[in-house]
Every structure is written in structure tokens, then in C-alpha cells.
Length: 609
Ligand SMILES: [Ca+2]
Image 1 (cartoon, protein in one colour):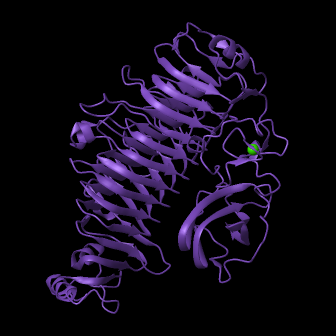
Image 2: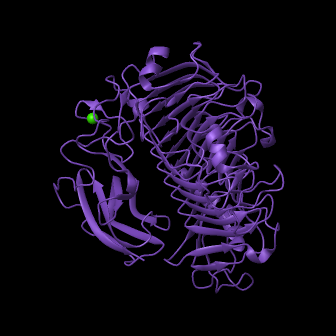
């Protein structure tokens, strides 16, 4: 050990800057020294003054930064104290900030608890992770009003070059961005034009997008993309890959120029999409590839889509397959999702037309709970596919090719009637010449698929109040594939409860927790979290939970007075959690916050106002 000491001393003296830097709105960039007693005034100054590996602590208040926050060294930039830290670009004038915070060609960077707001103009970004590097985390941040136009979600962008992003992760070189984490962020009110709220594109290998709330967006919520030459990455590595999107709540993502998905895999490979909730967006989940597969690149696919809850979207619940012939999506497993009353044709965010076509007409032209496009190799099992009256459950239309498609153990239903809910009009479907509209039974006769389908009402607890858990007598109970594929179905359901119970997987995204219904308090074996506290109460924007100890793997559930689940979050290795309650489906009133770990729980009432 002694031999190491001279090296450490050398590093200490060789570094410039401070290992802890403080920034406050009351500070001064000229006379300040970056200490807590004498802080700097701007975050830009604090970042510049910090040594590699330092932490920059930012006190509450609004920061009208004079230039972009550029980070090219290991750094933690975090809020200190309980008051919101807002980086506000509104005073800068349209188009003056290309990005608000840039993390460029570096590793080991964390941004924690900062709000980035009001960056307006074509090309605007909130956070931009660019180049190569690893271990980059953006968590507990909020991105608000980042757009080509300010506070306007219905204006039609002038052309396809009108692109903004709240968060863009872009691998642009032969060396990948790896271990990128976007955790528990809030993204809202962004007119992204032809861009997306959260974009992961190019040479990005290994990432986690977990627990984010993304809503009121004028296009796609989250995209994982590949084969876009604009990134500049070599074509053989120009695909975001090996990532997980889990536990995100995405809603009101609605474009006036395209069928915008809440979650879109576009040319990506090997992505898991789990336990997400998507509603009132153009399309719930879309799995495709718009760009031709590049030289040396992998044909898009290898995805697992499971335990997602997809309802009340405007055009369709899901698109599986690309609209680009010759680029058919490969080897994708779609298991245990719940699709409910999509294809609403409703006006969302004031968007009345899509490419000049009324949204209701567009929904009738393209819609269905699940719409198959060019796909070659997909397994579709254990899904609830519940259509509205007169709408289609499963659609594969003329001009597309569906090959090597396997489906079974799904539940099909629609209000009013279960006849003619599968439409294979004019398509090449699995090599058969079966075209036309079928009931589930006719579909099986024509295609041999779904021989073990369940047909009927699934048995939701209360779909009217968006509670899609199953009752103890539900038709969907124990009707999933008799062979449990834990990789495809997951080991836990959307509620982070055990996926296979009572000897057989249920159909849909929720598993009945036999003997202990999920909204009931689990068996109390001991009182955990003795120093637990939750504040403020009443709360309006955020609820802070101090667990009073390290929790290894806990689940937080928020329910209303009727026991309806409003939010569920998974927490790992944490002593503290901040929950954004701004988009809870119950705007106000008394809610119960329950923390469950190892079948023990604590519950607290919180008033939301
Ligand atoms: Ca079961």
C-alpha cells in the first residue's frame, strides 16, 4: 500500500479545481470561491471550476444561465436542499441554446434533481449525451417546455427538419456509449416537432430507462433508434442496443404529422420493454425500423415486450413490424401485455388531424388493438386484446408481409360481439392465403394459430377507473401458456409481483396474487422502515420518502380511497425516493402510499392538493 501513496499525492497536486463546488442564486462568479459560504452564481462557473470527479451542489432557485452547461469530465451535478432548482432558458431568446446541459465524450457523470425549462427553437435540447463514454446517469430531473415552439402542442411543424428533444443520447463514433441510465425523470410539455421527447440513437450499447413520466409531448415519447446516418456512427454499430425500458408512464404523446407512439423501437436491437403504461398517445408501442439496415448492421429485432399496459391510444395499441419492405422485424417476443380500447380516434393535446387526415379517420384506416406490419419472426402469447365496439382486435392489412408469426394463449374480446375482430385483409399472412375478417375461432381454423385462445371478457377489477388487475374469478386467470417462459413473460408482473402464481401464468399484464390480492396489505411479518418519513403532507408536485434505512428492493404503490392503483414504482438500493405526483390520474384527494419490501409493508395517507 505504501507504494500507492506517492501516486495519490501526485494526482492530488496535479488536479486543478475543487472536489466540492457550491452554486447558489445568491452567489457571485467573480468574488465567489465555490465554497458553501461563498458560492458561485452560475452552474456553468461551478462546473468549470470543479475538478474531475467532483460534485457540484446547486441550491434551490432559478438559474438563468448565460451559456450551455458543458460537461467533459467525470462529475456529479446535483440539487442540494429541498427547493426546486430550475435552469431556465426563457431569457435567452429563441434558438440561443442548442442544448441546456451537454455531456460529451466522457464517463462517470450524474445529473440529479435539476429542472431544465423553456429552451425554445429548432434544434433545442434539454440534455444531450453525445459521443462515447460510460456510466452516465440522469435522474430525478425534470424537462419542461423544450420545443421548437413554446407551450404549444398542436401547431404543425413546418417541415421534417424541425426537430427538438428533451433528452438525446447519441452515440456518434466507433466507440459506444455504454451504461446510460435515465431514472425517474419527468418530461412534459415539449413541442418536439419531428423529434422525440427521449431519444436514444446510434452507437449506444447498454442502457436503462426506468420509472420516467413522459407526457404532453407533440410527438413520440421514447424512441430507441438505429441506422440513422445523421449520427455519424459507423454503420455496423449505428444501432442502439441491449437496453431496457421499464416502469415508465407515457401518455398524451400526439403528433399532427405521423402516428406517434408513446414508445418506439426504430431499427434498434435486443431491447426489453417491460411494465410500461402508455395511454392517450397516437400509438401505444411501435416496434419497427424506418431506415434501411446499414452495411454490417443487424436486422432490427430481438426484442422482448412484456407486462405492459396499453390503453385508450388514438390510432392503435401497438404496431409490430416496419412499414419498410425488406426490413422486417426479427425474433420478437410479445408476452403478457394488456391492450384495451385503443383506436379511440380522439383529439389529444388539441391535435385534430394527422397529415391532414382527421384523427378519427386515421384511426379507422390504420387502427386496431394490435396492428401487424412487415414482421418476420414474432411470438405473441398471453396477451389480453380487448377492442371497443365495432373495432378490430388484430389487424394485418394489405401491403404488409407477416411471416413466422406464432400466437397462442391470448385472450380476445370486444364490447358488443366477438365475431369478426381479426382482420387479415389482403395481406400475406404466414404464407397462407387467408384474407378477410375472422372471429378468433375462424382465425384458428384458417391459420392454426391461437388454438388455446380465451374468448370473452377478461375480468378486470375496474377498467372504467383504469384498474386492469384481474378479479379472483377472471376468465384470464391461469389461461396463459402452460409452459412458463420466464424470460419472455418476466419473473414479475406489471405490479412487480410474482409473475407465475397458482401453478400457471395468467393472461395480461397482471398476475392474480392468489390468497393475497395485490391491493391488500401483504402479510406483516415485521415492521420495516422504523424511521420512515414522508413529506411534505399535504403535497402538490412531489412526495419525498425517507426510508430511514437502505432498502434493497422495494415497491411503492399509490392508491386512491377506493383502492385503485394510481402509480407503482420499483426502488432498488435506496434510502430516499422522490416521487413526481404531478401526473397522477387522481388530481387531488387523499391517497395511500404503501411501501412493500419482503412481504412487509408500511402505509401512509397523503393529501394531494
Ligand atoms: Ca396464475
